[in-house]
Length: 417
Image: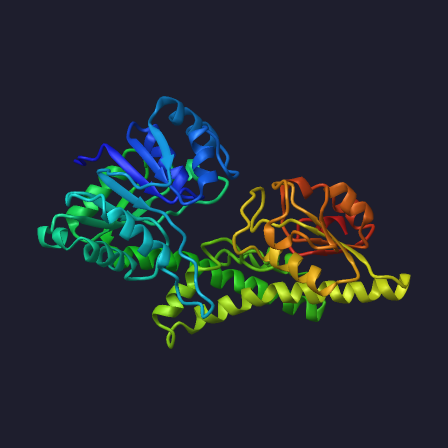
């Protein structure tokens, strides 16, 4: 059984805050830690600084009850869950500086009997590295030998996080079998699904493999979409027909791949075995190249408009998030495409539509040719409409949109042609 009654969750983003809230909802004292004062203030006021269904109710309920608090300082606790970003650097190798910083900070609070869990999706060996960082800060605890480490990667879908934290199986890797079992006891407070134990490196690799598998399959669909365009067939119909085979399940193409998982995790495997991970690397390169292919499609349509009208076209880009019905812009191909169009179509007006945000992200602000626009106005004004995210708010607009030139990267309007 776990002797954990208090937990510090370091990093209150799309994974850390839901984890903190659901732990608090199940009776633990939880203190969230984040470097962003705005995030801390929002949580202490019982609100959520991003869109995630149901999360607001959990946060408000547990802040009101006094079980959930937040600050920029790391407190003493029985267990620590590190859920900080793990981006990659310019050369596609993992940037573990956030994990290192979190480890050094929490090390000051340790007495030696705590459990430290890394939830951040990480390359193989990251949990061992975090342990080394912590023990280098606290050599007295290295001698004591009772500090425990585990890796428990999340496996949730944005927009369904609060449900999937409870219902999805979870892989838990421990630095020792005792550490794994102690982590199991903690996650069992809210997870109703199976908790499968292994070592830390295998747990790290399992998460990367899950997302790399999906990335490879999406790359197949994206390459198929470009081939289909070249030879003049409807890729959506091709996939629909091919998937009637009982052992074929092709995923859907899009304008690229976004989010902090699928767009990032495969590079961690490539970095770990650069000479061997050839298929995984190729898939990443295909998906990373798809936004430029979309830009070229818009350029071709823009040439036709200019030939017909004698003026630069007005272009509406529908969606900035990396997936439908959320406000998460991390690694979003839609965001990258909109930025590229603004950079390259300097004489055009770019009307950006994103119903889940109130203002453009900083990198798109202060551009004379780009404005955040309501969807109906954008469709009315545009010569070219580029559907980049299949938000539910766009679902019924195909018949109106197809009075203009449409580039539907998601197939949401294919029946409206």
